[in-house]
Image 1 (spheres, rainbow, N blue to C red):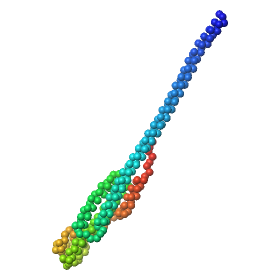
Image 2 (cartoon, helix red, strand yellow; image 1 turned 135 degrees about the vertical axis):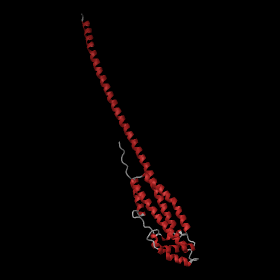
Image 3 (tube, rainbow, N blue to C red; image 1 turned 90 degrees about the vertical axis):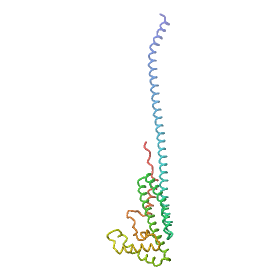
Length: 266
């Protein structure tokens, strides 16, 4: 065999040996490429997931913040409306009954007009109690009770002065009868708490009957006798003074509106 034939055979042998090597190397390269692509894809998915979660947390935090702002606005409006109703109720009572003696019918008319304001205060108090929180709810109850007592006291005083006005207005037509009424009223005030009990004396019954006769002669409503003679009930010990209750409500409401919101849970 000549040299050219030998060279051809050698080259063919070398080529046959190189084919498996090339295949192995190609397979390794392919595996490396696939592994790299897989890691790249995994990293991309992780980054995308992290971005999604960050966006979701941002949307959730924004939603919670907007809800808190809305809720705070609702509470603020409820607190302000209740406070305004309380002040309207008490200020109107003070204005209605702070100008001196009035005729009894005018006094009763003004007392009746206050019922609408009292009802409005009660309705708005329930709204605040539903909105909370507990400290504001407690302060609302105390302020409502205190305001009602203040107005009730003003009404009782106004009725007493109206009864006095009615009696004094008869002094020109019935001077002796009016004078006698004012002599007997303090006596009746002294035993009024015994009426209807075994402690009531016969002399007290006589005084009451004489007062009724005098009221009838002067054409004065007999119902005013109780208004004049019934002892003034002191304020219950558990009722907070109005100004203090007002300040406590404002403090509780302000504290509830300015609470720092906790960060949202991830």
